[in-house]
Amino acid sequence: MRIHSTIAGLRAALDDGGRVALVPTMGNLHAGHIALMTQARGQADTVVATLFVNRLQFRPGEDFESYPRTFADDCEKLADAYVDHLFAPTEAEMYPRPQGYHVEPPAEQAGILDGEFRPGHFRGVATVVMKLFQIVQPDVALFGKKDYQQLMIIRNMVREFNLAVEVGAGETVRASDGLALSSRNGYLGEAERAEAPRLFRTLTKVVEAIHAGNRDFSGLESEAMSDLARHGWVPDYVAVREKNDLQSPTAHDSGLVVLAAARLGRTRLIDNLEV
Ligand code: PAF
Image 1 (cartoon, protein in one colour):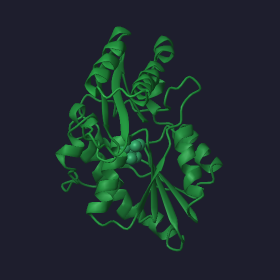
Image 2 (image 1 turned 90 degrees about the vertical axis):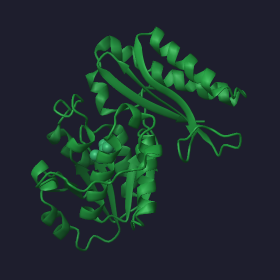
Image 3 (image 1 turned 45 degrees about the vertical axis):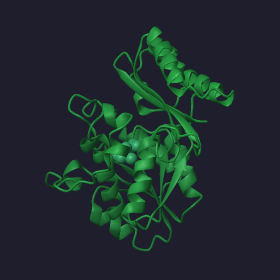
Image 4 (image 1 turned 60 degrees about the vertical axis):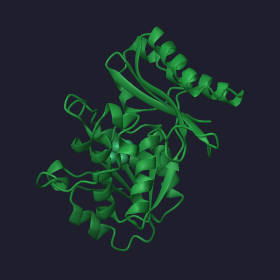
């Protein structure tokens, strides 16, 4: 695997790369990321992973400074997953001057759910992903379904800007107790780690209730939030939404997903389950 820290170096290396797949990451890689690399390997001649902790998508007071940075480990995992190129730029390379132009996703997509609790987050994500698309010029780019809203926003950005990239999705990878793998799981203390799978169990219960014919979505949402709160969580939301646009379900919904975000101690976890 070749490691590039400059845009010029990466571009020169990709000159004759055939079909290129991109997997953008912020590092601290786990099996979920590696599954995306494997998926990418099966779809392209050249696989490019990027590793960049993007300051633009963190709000003041969030965990930008403390976000786990495990470069040597990440390189080893990527090489083992047959990734061809790792682009790991410095902040000065990505943002040589303060970013003045931004991709602003519409409020009905970026101001709801996680966007309500992390204002500006998806603007930061869309802006860096647009930059990465321009830098790498991939034929296909892969994102995990764990960040369901991010995936929807990127798909819509690609469509509305007519970007020549296919967006692929990877299934959420879970620990054996159901907890969705996430770099932020590393923040959990021992007792919190034992409690954390409740988020997945809560989502599972909501999905089962919907399968059983319950259409009282707001009742299911508040029951789920109370259950989490009773066990020491501070839930931001549990929401039943339409899969394609994450709006509230209509009578003729086209498929549903249940999404949740909640804090356990100082760790904010998100998860979702398609119905
Ligand atoms: O999902 C992530 O890790 C990040 O939001 C992404 C897509 C790499 C952009 O910084």
